[in-house]
Length: 286
Image 1 (cartoon, rainbow, N blue to C red):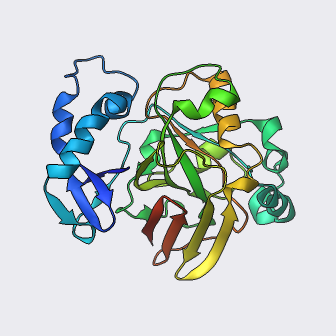
Image 2: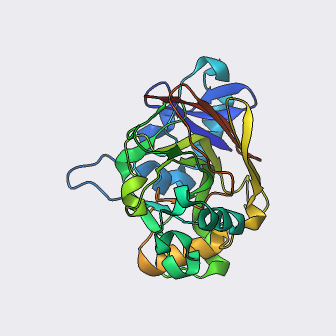
């Protein structure tokens, strides 16, 4: 199932080129009082909501997909966890290009050595928004990534159990400003994490290990790879992350970008596609 938010705070199921409204299912979410939970309530309750979502999709109002504005599919992630240099060819290009490594040894080391990093939640935008270049004096690069949405809480998760903790998958754009500073700092500018166009639920995509990824800029091919080339697989990333952090419903894991990262400028248009998930087109503005 392809679940999305659209036109404000409406929830829909995408089937082909049609949006089926299932917003009434939100009425089953518990009312909240301060202090609020540290996770996404919709994702946490999704297993219970699924039968009602299926029923609502069969009877709800429909709209052509091209007549709605797609918003963030996951509204309240507790944290955004990202994997650096998780494709071998990308590690090679980082080592070879001074514009990418800036002489910083940590940029050139293997993911098993340097671990993961966090991005600010304030960097997150939906697929109908634009990336705004925050540091025009620097090189600003695109990075397409498979995004994993955690579905239930877990700590010290074993790799063989990891996929049972996944609610679904989306396309992620992990935008970055090049420079000598820490990754978390340079990748957390406003609008520098794009998630969309919807979330494909885990039962529809049980195996994320062989998905084609493609990113073009103004129609020019920039990145093309397959998740089979990940250094650490999705289960291994979940296990690594949960060995340090308790994972909560709605947490996002960006699984790393392949080779071909390159700069974008205001006026460019990025199109990101991941097999079995979909495509999102994101403009770049100044």
